[in-house]
Image (cartoon, rainbow, N blue to C red; front, side):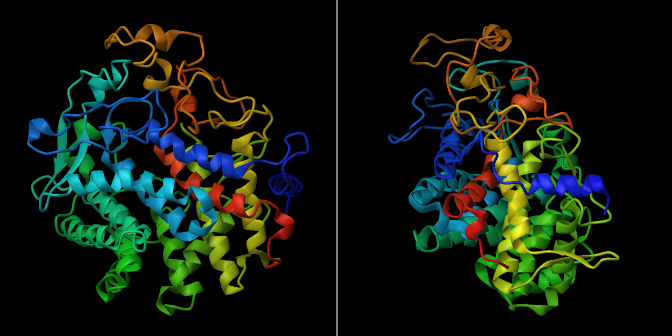
Length: 498
């Protein structure tokens, strides 16, 4: 093990620096959920708390004769992209499923956030063998800078069907519905069953009519949310969630039959809206670690290998880099999506290992291994970095801590609210607010931005640098589960000595 690897590992396992103080993970959790209210499309409910937002997209789907109101805008624009929205819903649900007790008083508001998405997906999948996967022309929307309440760009509706397959987006939608059915199993059994029934039907469609939605709808969904990794991972991912939700033998058999064909071990070092491989292996590995299914040992081995690549000083072949300040990063934009998604998997897997009394074994000449507590420390270090324990002493969550991003790349946040400026602000009129150096007038509380994107830990806090200043729903979704866990277990000294 090289000296640099030892020092980096020590850095990653350090507790919060003394000057930063103890983080209020419960407050951060509440704010991370509140963010989703700022992303809502449709008619807002009476209990809407971010009052600067108003109703929007009230005629979505009308041109196609369907009701597609509701759902979430994915980021700082006004398009509803079904692929990342479904992944967002799946990850929100996974956090509630695994760490539900830790949500404490925030559990109900977290369920409401999930339901805002699953209600939309029930509308988007109401027609047999059809999934409506996008509302809004991304190209035209992105040429404007206007509030969602004012948007006048085309609300074009895009769908996948037998003639235009989209197994990736359809299967991810099935996964979201299946995971949601588990969330509502006790709170609303009737709704839960409706979600599960629809999830099974949508998965059947996704599997029967195979193809990538990036091929069927290339001009509409690319370059924003092209599926670069193929639809095979989403089919396995959906089958895993359906097996977890229904316990039906047919889904277990599907996973067994298609493990190699659909590439369960491919691209294991990534996890996000486009690539589910690592998530598949971690999710299914729980079956093995809980002693429920020995057949799936290969998934546990894949998950184990994945964890090893994230731990500097443990693996001989690390796949992830860390900044000098300790932030996990992958080359490309919106780095915090990798930070929160991968950290969530690390935490989830650490809990599965703890319950099984197991460690991560990384092989090598020294027979290196890591206990679950070490995995939790790595995950916690990433959360603490987001909340302000970083070289800039800046929280990357809007509204948390004394210093946070003020000029986020977000139309609704950066333009005066309807209450402050009742007159319409048109497509090009909003450009003045985009170019302004002034802080955004509306706080999108809880939004986590893309953050530092390279090895320098630098952050410009500039609207124009959207790769770093734009929040997304799929950054916040996995963070909810992380914050819930650490709000209930903030002190590493009190963790079990695994």
